[in-house]
Length: 440
Length: 155
Image 1: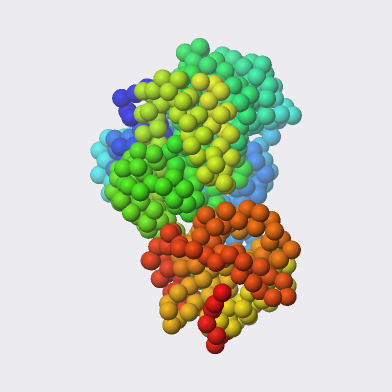
Image 2: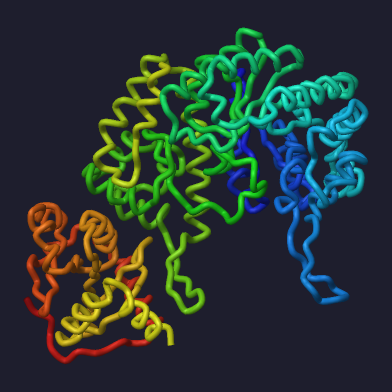
């Protein structure tokens, strides 16, 4: 992967994913770590990045926008040890972050949200400086604090993200200005470090409905002239998108390409891979989730269900659904499965000529749980790990395929997949494949 | 006791009348009848088990939406020897007009009115995976037995 200009990043959502990440190290270029995860598992995460992933890029997402959300998103209930009463307070990870993001954030965190009027010249400068320094130094501070990692050289992030806040529809111009100022103020600190600086654009998906306004916004960000940009359309679901929105997204990406600036999607799936044909230079996603993400809540909640990533339709499906599909398609040999669904290392190992049975007993393996008197079958840890490992390999294959295939081939693949599977997957609407194909 | 709670909830629901009648039908045919038993990724409404023959029957009860019932029933086929869909007689014509679908998949149909009638016998279940069937039987051993019938199940 690293030989191509396209950058494929995995966003680590929980430390429990380390096994899947470690086993699939050859399937991605680098890793994104959210700052709140880094703060809550600082020692383990630092060790993981500097030793296990020593040869991989890393980027810290400082998630500064969290301090502009309602306090409930960064607070939790705790029991006061003295009074034994429940109290609501800022989560420890955000408390630690606030302390490092300068006086403004530290003062308001947990009490109120950051508002437009907080971004004075002075505050903007302090915030930009602190957030930049945090990304540059956080891991190395942890290494200094704990010599057990045995790392002699410091490890710097692949690039630094400017502090960013959602461009809200009621104050578009003002929020664009705040974000632009934060990028400008981050330049100096970044320049001294020699690490590239990327500006971040966080906006609602409704911006895709007004292409003209979207392109003006892109040009305004391009004026900041930093090393590259990242975008995040809040909660944009690539599997539930109109052709018009796909078209606007393509134009948005092309605008950055024509400005000779790399542009990376912070939460994307196969549509983002397709957008490489129009200038997208990277994509970030979690392991079988976070191909879309809402800016609130910040944390993802419980682990996502174990689903099988079905390569031809570029979507995750329940193992039971795929087991039925195997029957519908009359796949009676391993070769048929590998040719039509996936031929990654994991599938090669797990699928036998007893296709349906081997699939069900590997990716679909469940175990009995009794919770509050109710019987339930849940995916085993083994099947979760298999689904994650398969996902990472499938994604790697997808990106390699997109980079090598022509637009016409990519379009044919989408069209063929829709006609092959739309009648066989009752629970899924595959119209998104047509929407994606519309730009090719 | 969990099974009593389940029964109470089911009796209160719209499907409860059908569940009760179907359960009695199979109880009277020498089956042990259990409710809400997980099979693969789904939870079936009624699971009948004959310890003498070690055979299992999974039943999906639906008031309407028979297509959803077919989908659920197909998943039960991974872990039960035979699978039925049970519906009120007044709705049975909908599924009978499309009988080729349950028949195609080997799913049986039960019509419920004042009496319980088997309208379509399930055919050979090609989806059955013996390990999942064993796991289903293991699941029911975790539950307290609901009822034991004396009469063998017959069509």
